[in-house]
Image (cartoon, rainbow, N blue to C red; front, top):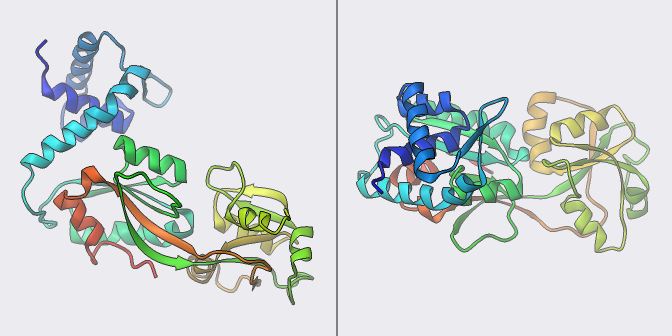
Length: 300
């Protein structure tokens, strides 16, 4: 069976974009040409590979099984032909990064603006970060790097420490607990929980469980800013990273009438990390993106 390598590039583009029109644009091809290539790939594999949805396409189980090796192979082929260095002034490439919510408010705009100035032909795409989703996307090759808190990582993933932080408890300034917070008061109060997925509990609940206690969760939100807005107008409490409260939140809210208290039980420091897959470790463009002081925001 003769295999046109262009078909693999088309499949990769459709897999990354999940939309035939956008895939054609990213490849600088016409949509009919991409559709024709997809038909030939379907004939070769005897599988539909992608099924239509309301917003584009989704891969079949066969395509999902093919994807890891297909993407790794294309990345290796490109790397073998890539120049030994990357010229940001003329280089044209894409960077895909997921950033945890507590850093995204300051990092997304800073990275986008700095990249536009330093490498005008480059493109950056931001994704919503959750622990599981980011690790899965980095493994599949649909994400280049991620910033978050990762307790354990696969062997093929590289990691760089960025900054530390700690959780604090926040409430409105007129709250009856604003003058001091005991463990009994903390567990008796109702809380706003922040979790990107909207499921499960958070780090604070894990630390609290070591004391044999639990807390009452009244509201679950996806973003720290939403939690702080809720507690500013209620008697609910929330726990957020201190760096987020003192940085991005103060920037958008100014004097919001909130009070910060230390958590009344033992906790660990938060360690933010930048992670990326082995397949991109020596890629010149991605090395520049990860290391460039002109692009990377200063995390701390």
